[in-house]
Amino acid sequence: MPRSRPQTIVVTGASSGIGRAIARRFAEDEGARVALLARGRAGLDGARREVEAAGAQALPISLDIADADAVDAAAQAVEEAFGEIDVWINDAMTTVFSRFQDVEPEEFRRATEVTYLGTVWGTRAALRRMLPRDRGTIVQVGSALAYRGVPLQAPYCGAKHGIKGFQESLRCELRNSGSRVHLTMVQLPGVNTPQFDHCRDKLPNEPKPVAPVYQPEVAARAVHWAARHRRREVWVGVPTVYTILGNRLSPAITEHYLARTAVRSQQTDRPVAPDRPDNLHAPDLHDPGAHGSFDDQAHARCPQLWAATHRRALLGAALAGAAAGGLLRARRTS
Image 1 (cartoon, rainbow, N blue to C red):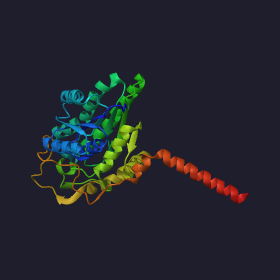
Image 2: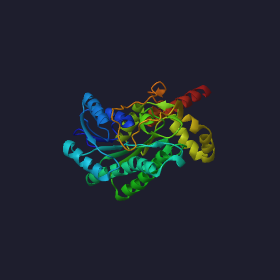
Image 3: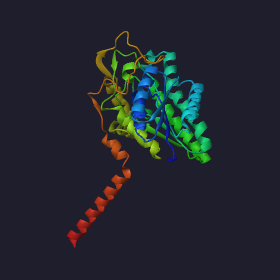
Image 4: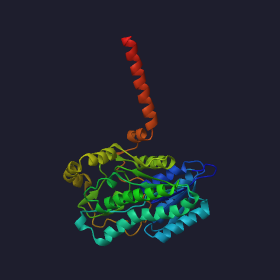
C-alpha cells in the first residue's frame, strides 16, 4: 500500500465489540483516516470520539450492512471525504443463540444477511474501487467456527463457513486476473464482546464465549497485522489452532466432544431475562463499547498470536540454536 499519504481504513461493525477495537487500533497509525460503518448511532458516536481521541480522522456512517446499495453508497462517501480506500475490514455480524429447530426462518435469514451477505457486499464495494487501481487490502474477520461448526450457533457458523468459501473462490479469480488486491482472513477464538449481551438468545440461560476468552484488543492487533502483511490467513489463540487442526485430524472425535461439552459451556448460570433486548432487527439505543461482560475471564495477551506473526524470527532463532548446538557437539567430539 502506498505510504506517501494518510491511509484510509473502512471498518464495518465499528460501533461495538471487535469492530470498535479494530477502529481504535488503526486510529493509532499516524495520519489514519477511519470510516466507521454500523447501524447504531450511539455506538458510532462513541467510536468516533475514541478514534479522534487517538489523533485520527473519523467518518461515522449509519447504515444496514445487509443493504448492498447502502454499502456501496457508503464506500463512495468515504472516498469523497477521505480519498482512496486502502483497507476494508468486514466485521459486522449478528446472530441467534438457539437450537436450530427453535430459530424462525426470518431470524435465520436476518443473521445470514448481516453476517454473510454484509461481508459479500462490503467486499464488492471495496473491489469496485480497488480493482481499477490494482491495489488495496480486504480483511475478513472470521472465526475458528469457519472450520468447525458448534451447537447453538447454526446461523453464525453457517455464515462464517460461507465467508471462507466465498473468500477462496474470490481469491482464485483475483489470482487468475493477476490482480494485486490482497485478501486475508483472521480466524478468531472466543472474544469478550457485547454480542453475548445483545444478540438474540433463545436458550434457557444467558450465552457466553467458550473459554479461554480473549479481549477484543487481541483480535484488533491480529487484524491490524493482517492488513499490513500478505498472509492468506492469521489464526488467533491456541483454541483456534487446536479447533482447526483437531477437526482436520478427526472430525468425528471433535464432533463427539462438542456434542458433550459445547451446549453447557456456551451458557452461564444466569437465566435469560424475559424482556432481554436484542439487536437482530434494530440497533442498540445505547453505546455498547468494545468489551462484553467477561472482563474478569478474558486474556489481554496472546502468546500464540505473537508467535504466528513472528514466524521468521522464530525460525531464525531455531536455526541459530541448532547450528550452535551442532558446533558445541562437534567441539566436544574433536
